[in-house]
Image (cartoon, rainbow, N blue to C red):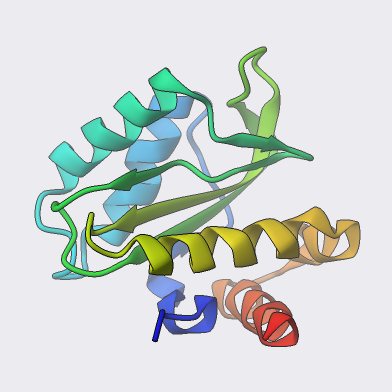
Amino acid sequence: MPATLADLLEERHITLDLRSEGREEALREIISLMKVTPAVVDAEKFLQEVLAREEAHTTFMGDGVAFPHARTDLVTRIVLGAARSRDGVPFGENGEPAHLIFVIGVPTRMVTDYLVCVGALARITKDPANRAALMDAETAAEFSELLRAASLLLE
């Protein structure tokens, strides 16, 4: 059975005050939160794979949301990091700002889990009320709980 979004969230992988102003720096900042888990085998190489994927095709989804990711053997299970940037980080092909950034690492063998995760995030962040609530969250725990509650409504 594929992992649910609620299974993947860890508060320690969330920052609500992303300091970075550029895409590469933002991804480095988020992945630095994710590397504390043993599931991330090599954070620097994982970052390089996420950046390469982003260079090939932007993961900016519109509405201030981006899902940078890599299917890689540099993670032993699916991992998720999240960040909020009030000012936005240039992400889209035309430099559109991303305010909510979700970094996903998934082992190459876990295609279904990846699709479930991205699909849930896409449905949650497509809703303007959910995006607003995530932007207003005061703590990582609140941000995580908002995502959990929204993901449970999708099941």
